[in-house]
Image 1 (cartoon, rainbow, N blue to C red):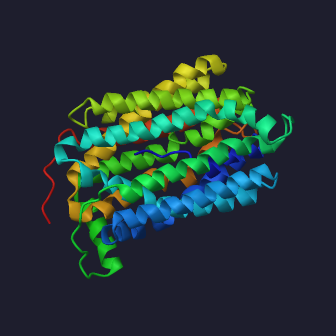
Image 2 (spheres, one colour; image 1 turned 90 degrees about the vertical axis):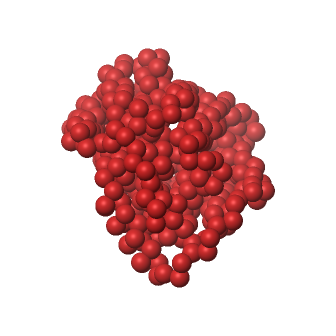
Length: 391
């Protein structure tokens, strides 16, 4: 699983070409993961995962509907989008560890790397197709919802309404999926459960160093939900169709990265390689003169990011014991998504055309920070998988 574009972050595009607006919406969306991830992991280890996932998906459906309606009625504002983003972020704080933990409910341990990769692939197929069609659907929205006015924000509500409809398919699948029975949680306190997960991560170097790498790159360069729309609108001067195509290129690369990783029996194979490719292609994006050349560069960014994240996720999943899976995967979500708020602010500040570095040198600065973190952790990253401890 990787960090995706929630409906509220996508809706930030209706607020104009401000990197600060994109950054603040991302902060609102991902701050709940920063605050609630540890608690969410303990809940996931105690409560049936079907119940958790149905609750989170219904909440996300309602946030998507609120964004669609307010956009349609031309009521969308930055504070409103931030509120919607925050509510969706609360749901995602519980949804991510539950979704990542459920992988082992349906596949044997030997197939976990392939399952994680294919899970990421399915996510990116839907995201890529959706964003590739965004410009087309938004253009159709000009006729259907905006009365032919190409500058009316209401035209953007049509793709948001279609996003609402997609949630009903997810809810049906979750309601009918045969989740296996799990042992009842021990009658320990929630704080004791959280402490047990933290102690395990601290004592397990494989998990600890992988999480440090993911957290460092999430803080610096894995902020494409800010970088892509800002580059599309401000640096390249493009409209919705080009933004959708650029996002689709990134998604196609991510799909290829997930497929590549799914073919590798050892999830550690591409951990370092994926990080290097991610940083190198992001540096190329900073030097790219226009959207035509940005398509292959963003595809390389997506390929490197998914190679890294699938490798990291599989390594953690194969190392941890089942009894701690929810809590440890919530910590993984914490470093991946919880670094979104400070990372979004850092990225939006550095790439802003109003700041001293500007968009291109600002992106190179983000690459340099990510590269320094990778260099510091390079020798400590695992090369072989330990057997998971039995608790």
